[in-house]
Image 1 (cartoon, helix red, strand yellow):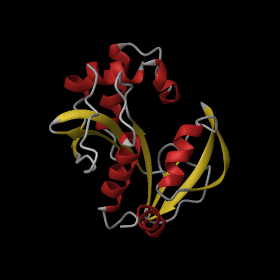
Image 2: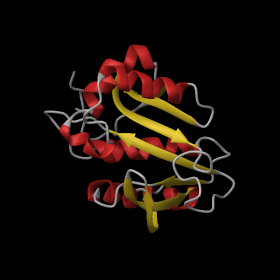
Image 3: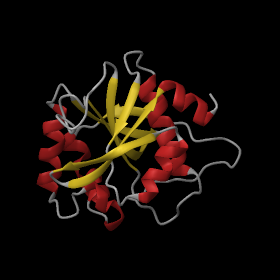
Length: 186
């Protein structure tokens, strides 16, 4: 299934969010995470059962949540929110109260729309900052993922340093609510 990314040129897309249902959504997620353009998601060789299992584990985890971003009721991206003091970055940096970790994935499409992925990351960040407990968003993309570094910078992230994780060398970056608002002129 290829998501529809078309939008009127004058209005940014409007997204809603819902929790991932690991069993119902596994086939869709499998098609997204195993696509060659999703190489940095590190699930290219995953079987359907692997995706089900991974998202069942996330669903059962109090410190990690997966959400689908919907446009007109159709899933068009995936986001994950996690507690970086308990997942992903444990022992790799000094967490602050209000830190929230984030991953997002916009699936490959045969008809890309200019600005769509930027609209997605902007919506993801706005969604995270809707929670008054979130003061800063933390990301740790692969250092080689220059496309996501540019998107992160566009919404206010500032890189701090590289960190070595078991699966990759990551660029640890942070974005406060104020940095986000300034970057997107809210």
